[in-house]
Image (cartoon, rainbow, N blue to C red):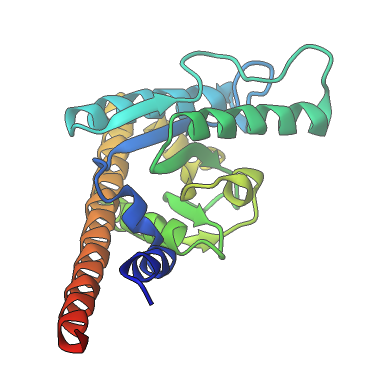
Length: 239
């Protein structure tokens, strides 16, 4: 067995090695809904606007932490085209958002939403696709930081099979930032200071994930280097 074959096997076993030389920190933030699609609405408050405000604050916070950020929308619109309606329009919109993330070569995608539930439900929660190990890792990091917000109701990460979660190549999570039908929480979501707290917590979770991801890559590199040393020593003994 040649050294080239060993290296090829190692790259299959440790796929993250292919990106070991790159700098981590390219994230797509997706403000859910937009345009004719308002999302959840209560008392004249629309989800699409809250999503966008949090996403903009999150972008700024991440950029301050030296993370490259792309928003899937910068204003009140979505990516569906004229002539599409219902589920067809929704799927087209999702696909364009996913395409933006792929073209950006993102390390992760985070979609921002607000929740609807029973009137007493409160607190942010993060969803990930159950088959995505990295998605769960990202979700747990973000949820952990959200728990640090004073007075927050500590919810847990959950799995979901939403279109964005199941059709992205990179780790993707959906952050439900609060319950718009809960009058007290709706009031908080309209407060710029509270939205800033949410954005800062989400940003910390994302950055922690990126740093941990790098550590995992470095561990893979070390294993590969150990394999190369082992093979070199083995060749010397045989020759």
